[in-house]
Length: 184
Image 1 (spheres, rainbow, N blue to C red):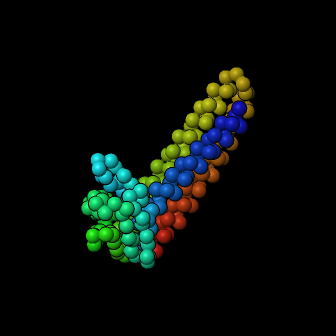
Image 2: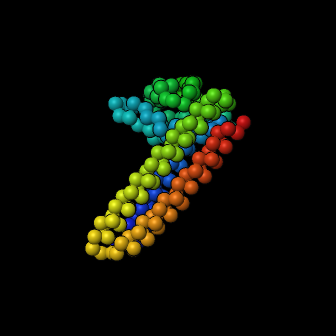
Image 3: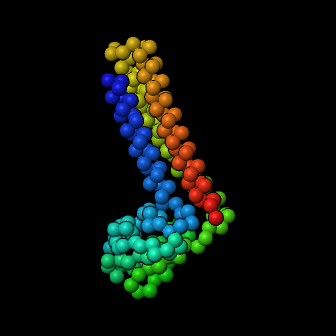
């Protein structure tokens, strides 16, 4: 039973790590990437719709994104959603596509992005710690009848080792992302 609890905790921590990686791909790090637009929702006939479901997103070079909507009537809505977003980009609409030029990051904007990176990292660590707490609570419940106190303590130490491994992985990912952001 405690093995299943530890396995479940590890799987949930893996998902928290995956969520962190997804969140970090949406941060602008100086290079154009279609993932930057993943969080942006367009009001399309009254329904919030992700941009990547409304057209194709291409990166012809490292500083340009081109959005080609499947429905040309959605151009204005896509443009409006990008302007409202926190990306700080100005879309250029030529009637059939939207072009986004990604300017080089200023030092101030880089510092803001590093703060956002740290915020995402802290959220991931909190999620991992919550999973650890849940696993330890389940192990303590088993201690009442199924397992001894010593076994319980040993399993809790195992959960802590798993937690430490995932927190270290979060730190490693954050360092790499910060380095990417600060790269000129």
